[in-house]
Structure formats: C-alpha cells, structure tokens
Image (cartoon, rainbow, N blue to C red):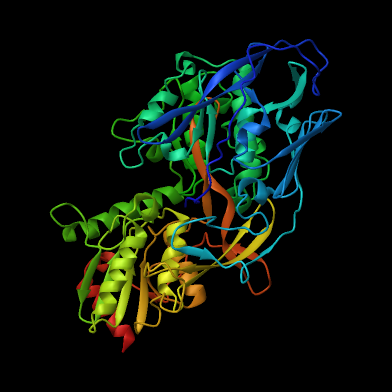
Length: 578
C-alpha cells in the first residue's frame, strides 16, 4: 500500500569546496574532512529528471560515507534553527527536532508533524487527495509517545559540528537521516556523483521492471565502477539496514523482532550482509526481504550500483523473488497464478477483463489494483475514464444506478494485490450510504491510534453532500475476495465488513497490514517494507490488532474458479439475497 505523501524538496545550500574543522561531538582523534559540492537531482518519474540545486556533502577520511545538513530534508517548511553547546534545535509549528552532537542522538517531539506537516496533530492515512475531505471534527488521534529519541551511536553513526566560513553547521549521516526524516515515502540517495531526491517509484517502471531515465542516471553514478566495498562501507550499509528495520518496519513487531542485527545473526545472513562483495550483499538483502520477512510488502526493488540496478537470478528463468520466497510468499505466488488461470478464459481480445458486466439483477465492477486519480492536475474528467480506481467506481456505479434491473453490486477484487491508499479511501466512500469513508490505523513508533473519517465526492460535482455514496441505492453490495486480495485489497473488505457497508464473499484475503516504506541503501540496493502506519482496529478489550490475518468472508465460495464468471457469481449472490 502506498501512502500519498508530500515531496520534501527544499532550496538547498551550496556549502563550498573545503572548510576548516571547528569541533566534532563524536571523536577527539585527528580526522580529515572534505566538503564536495554535488548537484541535487529531482526524479519525478519516467523521463522527468532535472537539476534543482547544488548542495554540499561532507566526507571523513576520504570514505564514501556521505554526511549532510539536516536542512536538506525539510520541504518548504519554515524551520528555525538554534544552536547551544553543539546541540541543534530545529523548530516548526508542527514539530521540534533536537540533534545532540555530543551524544549522537536525534529527538523529535512530534514525529507525525515532521513527516506529514499538513496534519501535525492528527495522523492521516491520506494527507491529501482529490475527491476527499478529511473530517477534522469527527476524526480523532490518540497519541502516547510525544517524544521519540533515536540513538545514532547504537548503530555506529555519529553527528558532529563543522565550521564553514565561520559558521557552525550540524552534519549527520545521509542514509539514516533519510530513513528517519522522509517517512519512507521519498528518496534521498547519493550515487557517488549526484544526490537524488524524489518519489521512490521514479527510478523503475513498475509495469516493465526496467529502469526509467531517472533510474539510469542514478545507477550511472561513479559508485557503479566499484568492484568491492571497503569494510567500513559494508558495515555502514549493514547498520543502515538495521536502523531502518529496528525503527520503521512494523513487521518486526508482528513477528516479535526488536533487534534486527541479532535476528540477522541468528538466521545466518549476517556475514553475507557484511560482505565486501556487492553481489553477495545484494543476494543476502533479497534473501532477507523475501525469505525472512515473508510478507508481501517486504521486497527487493533494485540492486547495487555495480549491477546498475538489475541483478539476475542465478537460476535460469527464475527471479530473486522466487529464489528466496518464504512459505507465505510462495503461497501467494501460487494463488496469483491460479487466479490468472481462472480469469484467462474471460479476457477480451486486448487481454483485459471487463471493468463492468451484468447478469440478471447483479452488476460486477472489477479493478486489478488501486490506482490514484489525478484528474485535476491533468484537467480531465472521470467521465468515461477507467484508468484510475476512482474512474472505474464513478463510471461503474453510475451505470449500475441508472439500470433499474440492478439490485446487487459485486466489487471483484479476487486478483487485486493492492496499490494506493488514497484510492482505497475513495472506494470506501462509494460503498457508504453517505459517502463517508471510515478507517482506523495505528502508527507503531508513536503508538498513535487514529479514527479517520473522509467525505468522498463520489459524483464528482465538487460538493461533499447527501448525494454522495451508493450504499442506499442497491439492495446489496458484495465484495468478492481471495487469498490474492492483498494490502489495499485486504483493507477494503476488512473496513467494509467492520462498518457494514458491504457483505464479503469468496475466501479469506491475504493480509498486508501496512503502508509501504521505501528505502535506498548506500550500496544502491533498494527495498520496500511494511512501515509504521498499520491498518487494523482495537478489539473488545481495547488492544490494537492489525488486519494482517485477512478479512474473513461472510459467505464462503468453495470453488473460486467461478470468480470471473459473472453469471455464476450473480447466481451465487442472488441466491444469498433470497
């Protein structure tokens, strides 16, 4: 599940080529320092690559480990910076962050305000999206942890003061700070030549698996000439992975892991993750993501600079996902293949399954993934458009409501494996009688529990009113799910069942409990994992339980081969309606 999030781009500072050392909060030994001026590249996706600024990165002892000023990560927020005794305070109405270079710690008094300044007091699954209006009065957020402190020294990291042209500056390690400050939704990554900022999917085409122009530029940096890593660099990369997982990977809590370095050692992958050979590190990382963290959100996206982002399986005709898949992922892969075989006889000449069909008194609306809409920016209308989830629901429900024969609507997500969180909330609004979507979630690192309500403009008239929502326009709305229904496609039946806006048919969905974080390691290997924003609800005893176990159906379909036969599905639901 992807979270619709702001892009942290700031006017960065050209620091110069060299400067004199003032003080260092982490070491008393003689250390050489060098400031390198590097171009900041904005990667929006596809062929959109542009230089937006120049900044200075600092390097110690001629190593490849980059340090940056924290201001690099702030968006257009108005941040006030003060310093006292090498302790730096960054203040904004939404948060306060304190970096103590004497202790190598970072303390944040409102983490949600740091990573999502548009909603500093209440967590929002969707900070912004068209056709949605967050109900600030009705929504609530219960926060337990006001201040979070991150111990950089625990992972071998340091922060320090460096003087440039008479002005003291705070520097911190680039990759850990990217994990901490980007909220898993943007990239800030150095390739040995340039600093890349932007959206995580900007570097690879998700449909083809090939690098975009931005991806080719990123993996074209000077790091791609390195045949091996230094021991220091390998340890830094290893500790960056552990830092991200210990602090921002909610799946650790699901499986009871709090110290991932200990976990890596117990599972026998520590040595390979610490290797100085790029291919060994890449394969070990893939093994961790697919085999050890055996949950569909945890994945290995692109590989090292040496392999220019693409590393092939050692087994001909296979993939790293198949090579290292754990039992849960293997089950999901098998289910995906089986569901495709069920669907194949019903594909049209273009190889697509119809988004809208009817049989008897039943209409079926089908969509393969949750795709965010962007009609406003494109100056388009959803009328007749089925390229987005909103467009499919807008046109599908409109057609069903105009047909007096239709009494039942089936939302078919039998082979849907998720997508964008904004699209999820939009769909929930279509199912509701009043057009209001309701979701509950918890942010694990802050222990914040949220009840969120969003009005959804389901008829695209620019208003949020009683004319929105289709829950009262049909006798029944059903959601057809299977084990393939993952992430957002797991959340849709889960929330709909909780709020009684639809009846669930099929077989228990496949889980996938969190918004996905994306992370670029110093080696160039990029991963995605279940982040801190977790979907679920409190049980009767007040304990939060994620939705990772799936949504159980109200009515089981034993033979899922009927999932794409609209006549057989219609017969099943019409039998239930009698």
